[in-house]
Image (cartoon, rainbow, N blue to C red; front, side, top):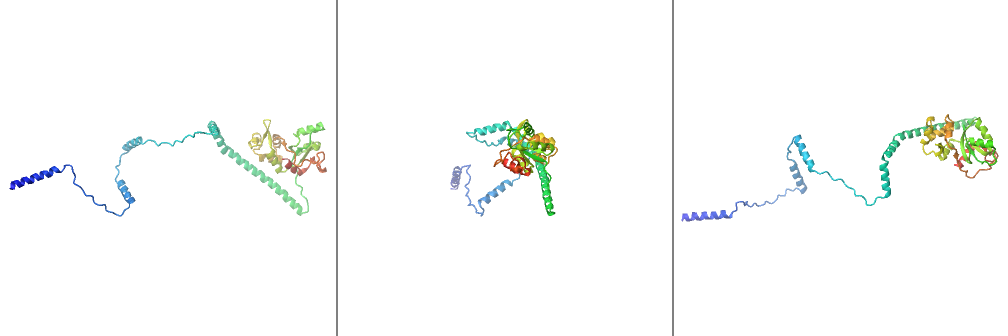
Length: 323
């Protein structure tokens, strides 16, 4: 009986071993997750810290260079942003682009000159203009002060006579004496309403007396001279009538005489400086228009109610009407 029982138990164990697979793992029951009270972002942060908290293995410089070279080869260069060409480009844009490519060097030189050399010139123009204006204001204040002093003492103050005259032609050539015509040519008054600046001396005063019926003249103020040059100013450049568009038109010819800008020219003519002759001959005779309101009695002298002859300071009002 004992032998049969032992044989039965052995058979049972063999059956059990046949049913069990060799690779099969015992089933594991999943434990429920414990809620530790942390949010998802906190858990993600903790995982990131654990990941980067591991110690990095140090490598030598030579090995590091090799690794970097391999990484550089793997990485491709970033693609540049490609702009799409428009279907239609205006003709004006194409022309301006072609001009800029062709004249880029010229444009760069011009830009450099404007902010380099020309800047120094502009500073000099400003300083010269400021200096001339201060001197003129000092002269005007002196005259006003002397008139007040003379008035207090029941006297008169006569300011010094002008050093320059402005002469305007008012009549044509009908029934003109040849000597008169020649004098008008010497004064450069070949047309009606032409005007010139003349130095005051014995010779010019005698010439003006002989042509008095055909011209009117007087002493101009600084304002009148400035307005004539700025508004109607032309020069004789290369035997041509050239407008005074910028100061370089003057400095090309008059730089050696100390005139670099329009303000220098105005001061030279007003005070009849050493370079008056050169500066005045460089100016083209002013072509003025007929005065608003017209002339009053061209054949009569100014003292008789006409327009001809010397009118002293009243010439400034006439020129203001002719500009």
